[in-house]
Image (cartoon, rainbow, N blue to C red; front, side):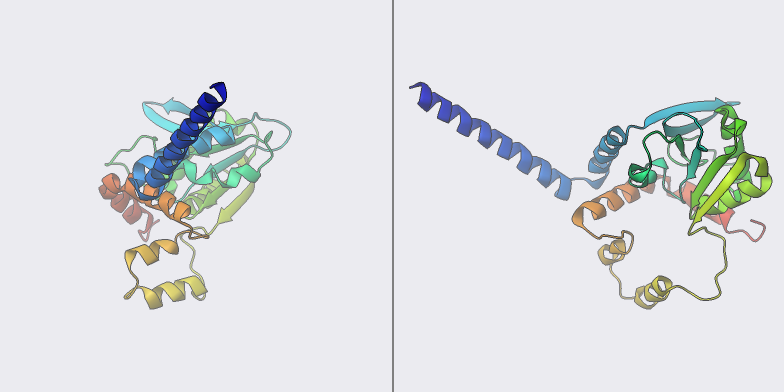
Length: 244
């Protein structure tokens, strides 16, 4: 009798777990991209051991996450690209030493950092805002390693020019604003395909590995930024001016 009850309990438990796993996988691959994206970002933050923090300067709020404490090695300040936020660095920092002090900032107007529609978002203005942030968290006490990608790379390069004493090392990853003598193979391919490429196929070019999981993440980023379309258009126009 006890053996029979044990088997029934085991089968019931197995069935419940199977249903839960199936439900999660269905929601992950077919459910709303934004909600799944938010859950995955929360999970990744926990896994990477980062802490989300806020600091204010004259009513302007900066949001960032950090890991580790300042030490012998230079701290790292990481600036993301246009229309994204600090979470884009979560995959990259898993390769960094756990004891290294790093700070990933939501760029001005992005993520949870204050957004002012009437403010200028040229690279110089953003660099000035970031300098305010650096001073607020006392990161300017010792020269740090500044990293920027895309538009963040353009701002990082200008920051190093404006505040050279703050920066001991500069890493620019595909920085915006540079003129290349010839188009890359990717740019040539996109120009060739842009007329016939469907939206789903186009998304595959936004990730290195076009798995279903990575596409869900990218769709989540797009869904999260969609309500702020007007701001991003203004920000992009500011960054593309001749003066900038």
